[in-house]
Image 1 (tube, each protein chain N blue to C red):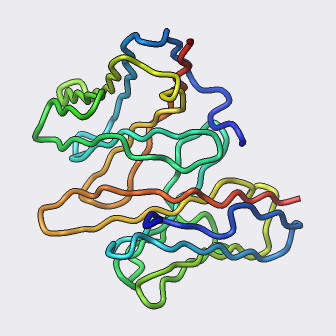
Image 2: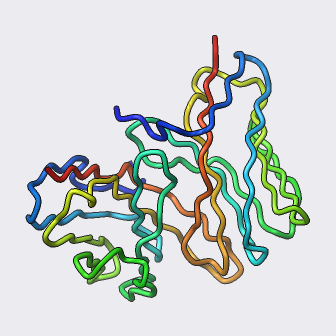
Length: 111
Length: 116
């Protein structure tokens, strides 16, 4: 498959460690936020979302934190596994229209 | 598989040729979006439909790009007179918009276009 994000920031973690991926946004009117995972040659895969009236949401092994004061979003992955290796994108929605994607982060999990 | 599907998965064409891509959204979804993604970047919005109505097309890259969703189900994206700069991954996403609901978009696998 073709690589996604050849020159993206890279986070390298050991298998079993926790990972934290960060994202900043600029539009204070953004009201809905999504994290996507993208593997080589594939489309983005939905991971977890959060609305602007929340500051934390948990899923299976993943947690999203939203800080509207500083316009910051983070994705925490617990007990990172080799299958988590991918490029991660945050995306923002304003008024339920199209998504605006942030810059991605490549996560590399070392066995 | 009941996810978003796209066809073809790969397209190689010569500069100046026209190409058309198809997207089949998740069946109950009323919104359909087209995005473009180049290497090292996140997807970039192009246009979207709610049912058969094209609600925003100002972000289409040029007048060579057009999209249709004639019956409110599948959609096509056409690029006329392709240029080498059109080489990219073209992604389709769909969502179900309901009153008070969020805009959770699900993506297809994309069509990789290479213009020689």
